[in-house]
Length: 270
Length: 338
Image (cartoon, each protein chain N blue to C red):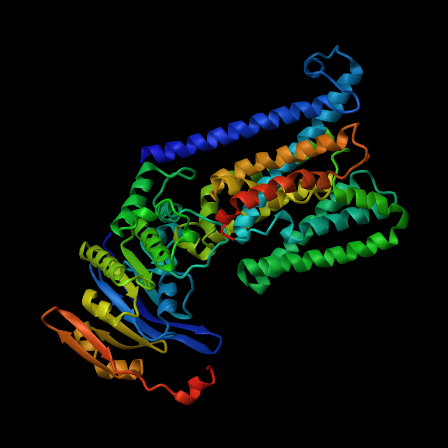
């Protein structure tokens, strides 16, 4: 199960636009790494590359010492799971049916799911405190609940490497903490966890390392306490903020200074 | 834990058993009814006893059984392929004809009608050729466009519209043969023979078995090709194999009996409205629903009490199926997720 992930100088171009430019990342077993960065900085594209949904123009993704492109779909699905943005399908499915799909990578039954798969499905929803969603139609869930089901589907794949694209988006404060705690626990038990996050404080609290992407490049990487500074937030996000690590509660405090609103620009919307 | 999967299997078995009983009754009634009404024992007699009434025997064995068999097979193929293609395109509005295949088949058949001195099997042969070439053309165009399932649907519409346009021209210049062409377009089982059934059966059975066998992976394809690949499925290959096999199955049936609409779109939805989107349920039950609808419709068409002779079987399937479908839609449409 223990598996490390190395992203070795990948480039992705869309037309003339460089989405990712020479990105290098390395995550080891037992580590949880957060990728942060502004909208459009290439976070999701990076995860899509690692999940093999798109292939980079150059560079290599190395999973457990082997290039990702050499794996078969089935082998790869047992090594890397990914929670990525999803289109609705137009057909209603129960939540557990979706989580159960995650088990398909390990299942031997072509037609019926085994009892073990149902057990894994329950465990995945259970660990996220989402058993109450089990029989609900996925389409009728709130965005936050849907997010939990999709995380559970990824966990049900039981892979050594887990990629999650904004796992805590749409979730309330309690559920955010719940999900991050579960992911942290999985990393502590030897999994390799790679998440993209907009919540810089959560990233700093739960991940031993963060990588900061901006315009497709890695602009900073390392321990959150060293990387997340008010200079960085100002240069990457263009936000002036106060950054302080509260030693008493062992938690980063990030207080943005309110941006001046351009009255002229807004007035035409009134 | 154990309970849940056992319940699921039991439910599927129950549904299949119920529908197949309905189907067997409809099948039997179909063979008994017609211009010559036969009792169940007379039907049985003519099947097993070579010395029985030769007229009844030739009607039952040479005419009614192949006709009803072919109609049921077509219903099965349309129901299952409809479910498969809706899943592959992830579009509830799709049906087996989405590839432009039906328009191609119609065009092929029309050309065969118009060209003089062709042998009797030219119509199905040309229909099959027309259907398959439009199918391949739309797959090719969709690949070129590379816009996923929406690109595929649009390519099918483009190809189908083009074939229909040519069909209109053929119809316009074929004044005295237009009725024959139109009659073929409506769909009919009146000319079905054992030979037709054998050919269609041989082509469509492998396709149906393949689709049923991969029903669980079809469910996963509902997440999209990319996500299915991440779950370890050879999704690109599976997608194209399922599309080709189920389209071929429909193509061969349609080439013999004409364009039978509605079943492929609606039979899978009827099942979904009752039991959800799991293809392991949807596909087999849609097959039974499709054949049941077609056999009943064909029964009405053949009924001597029917005032309109040569009523198109396709419109009868719609007339009996639509009210039932609308009832389901209103009653359960909220859970439809559209």
